[in-house]
View 1 (cartoon, rainbow, N blue to C red):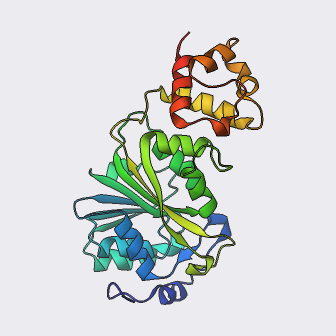
View 2 (cartoon, rainbow, N blue to C red; view 1 turned 135 degrees about the vertical axis):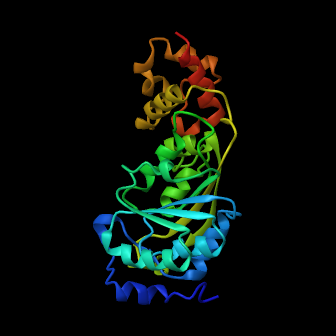
View 3 (cartoon, helix red, strand yellow; view 1 turned 60 degrees about the horizontal axis):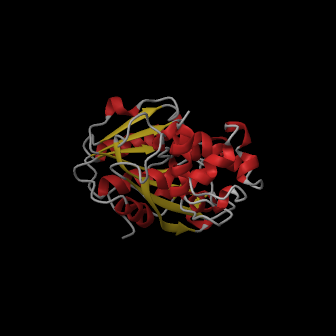
Amino acid sequence: MSQIDSLPPLRDVIETHELVARKALGQNFLLDLNLTSRIARIAGDLSNTDVLEVGPGPGGLTRGLLAEGARRVLAIEKDHRCLPALAQISDLYDGRLQVIEGDALEVNPLEHLTPPIAICANLPYNVGTELLIRWLTPKEWPPVWNSLTLMFQKEVAERITAQPGSKTYGRLAILSQWRTDARIALTLPPEAFSPPPKVHSAVVHLTALPEPRYPADAKVLERVVAKAFNQRRKMLRAALKGLAPDVEDRLVAAGIKPTERAEQVSLEAFCALARQFEKT
């Protein structure tokens, strides 16, 4: 399937609109429409779903989402140069695409979306992690979205899905796995993009759990985890020293050895520790 609709190939779109990727915007355009359709399918059945896409660029993934049956796509694009290409897609797909020019960190997409909602995006490298953390830490859970299907640098994807004991295990793994099922669904080489990045990329699919995997106060858990991993080479009794005078007693009460380091502690144990710190 070299073409998924009647629009020109992405290389032609990029050439026509002179869309040279800008490093300052974290842009790396995915050119293969086979791949963009595959990513859309990873997101699942979208026929009754509004989809939020951040950083559509020339619209490769946008076209994949619409061709695979998304009820509606809201695309937030900061680069005004991409708007004419996206307008052509909107025209072809009978208005099922709405494009907002703006910064995804500042736009409130909920004003334009109707549940159920999925988020699917080849995220700009320079804001990808910040957006993920925002989506994982809303004021209320479950969130407004059902799933996240996101492209990251492979290193970031491995941090999201990391297990205790690995060098990549840290705050991002805890935040992701506490409230979602997270898996790496696809890995892509640099040559799949224009321009080719220096690293491999990966698509991570996260499905929201109806409630967190283990009970804990979100703010307390975040504070404990951040403190623990900010000094990950230290034993926890030292890394968490500033949180309470009886930190060793709280670690023991949570079933954690005070001499362990953060990367050795499971998600369940971190949640148990957060509950200890909820106590006065």
